[in-house]
Every structure is written in structure tokens, then in C-alpha cells.
Image (cartoon, rainbow, N blue to C red; front, side, top):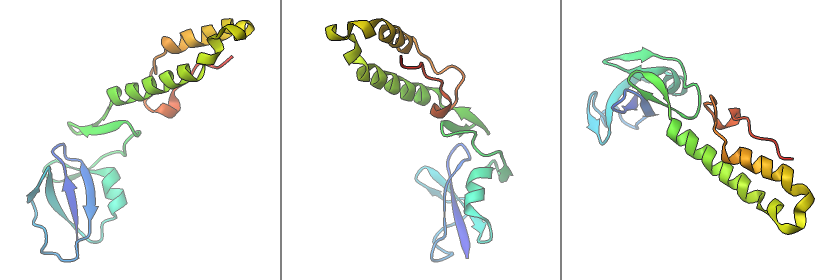
Length: 140
């Protein structure tokens, strides 16, 4: 039996399957956006997905440093636009959730909440490369 790796144009293995027959796929065959690479059945698919890439042959690599990385030009690249968009959505949610603090009947609480909301509006993710690493302003 064989395993079949579906390798994208960047050399990243997008998924590995174990077909019911060894003749269903051919080495080097193009299927949509992937090129088929045949693997021995003995390889561990989970490990291969994390630690291998294709560059004329399967080569070793470090696992992805986080959820917002893509394999491009034989290295992991931070998907900054996606991470920034996620941070922006969370900032908008935090602002929405604190809108009530700026109503007239909350006058004693307005000043610290206004400062917090100003921090949110000016907020950036800094050097964080995952949403869990972002250090958010603290609610009053």
C-alpha cells in the first residue's frame, strides 16, 4: 500500500491520503492545484505534514511557528494581513461591548472607559504572531 501526498505550488503538503488501490494515483500527476507525490505506507502522515516539504524531493523543515503562517519560497511567512484583520475584528467587538460606558447615566465611569476606548482605537498587535500572544489594553 501507498500513501499519496497532495503538494501545492509552494511545495507544502496540503493533505495525505491512503487510497484503496495503489493504481489510483501516479507520481507527478497534476490534480487541480496539487501535484501528486507517492509515499511509502510506512511514513507517519501527521509528522510528514508538519516537517516535510517538496523541492524536487521531500526535504526537512521545522513545524509551522503558529497558526498564521504559510509556507512560501521554502520558509514560513507570517500572514500579517490575516492576523491584523483578526485583531481589528476583536478591537471592534471590544469597542461595541463598551459603548454603554459612554452613555449619559454612566458619568463617573466615563473618564477611565474613554481612556480605555482610546487605547483600543490606537491599538496594534505589536510583534505578536498569534492572537493568543496579543497583549490587550485592560478594562477599567
